[in-house]
Image (tube, rainbow, N blue to C red; front, side):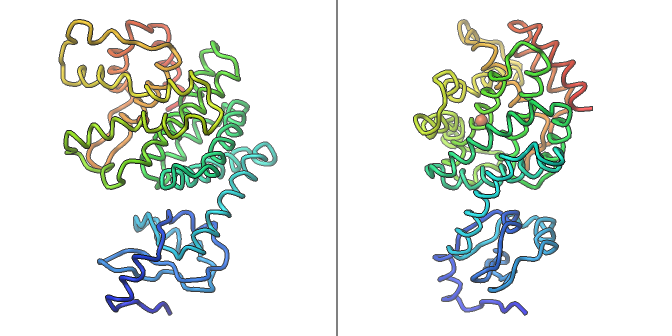
Length: 337
Ligand SMILES: [Fe+2]
């Protein structure tokens, strides 16, 4: 029987001691040294006790109840984080051994969990390197298994991760599938662009979490949010082996947003305002990101249909990249069916 911690002093002590972790990370827990808590009704309430291995069915129930984070004592949090790192590398190194659907799906979930840890600790070198290495392995695996990318894309989209995690995961898979379909890029280039796309949002880790889910951001908050691309650049520069071109794509991965805003607001560009376009690589990284963002639901709005999003993409890039746009329409028809 789990005993509640009810005195204000004990609750206050927990605030100082406990560490947040995504509920899904409990699947990686071995025997707990201390209890695990959820935050509800203004209190920490225990859900698993010391000495037990968290029951998988109960973890699923917590996820169904929309309990996205649990709180653990540091030793247990560290043990689970270590387990995640080891499992992530093991699984992404042996993706080709066994059932590719099962392996890929498991690896993508582990990468999503690791990305969440990276958002919480963007300056942790080990976490960053693990994300980078597993992304490299995942790129090679997806290139070899292109037929199941749409399945992975749909399945990860159904997971209960926050959209800041799903957004780079899904947009990078979409990008990789598209680049493969147009036969203009070598495998190595596709791998590089997949990696670039997957790492482009690590700067979101520097933005307070409570800002993600609200609609009416203040001007300063909007500016802060728009800065996440620059934050990503600052976090990644010199820490993992990315080329100048990759870093530049990351820094400018929202370069189409002003154009999109003007289209949505039916504004005409002022002279010289709309002339900046980047190369096809930057454009496709940005477009894949925008398609996933527009077609996904957010806590404050419904997603658009694929058709509606393509109509906007056409207005954004149709003049500069007519062939690529037509290829995108054909690709999405198959990819999202
Ligand atoms: Fe972004």
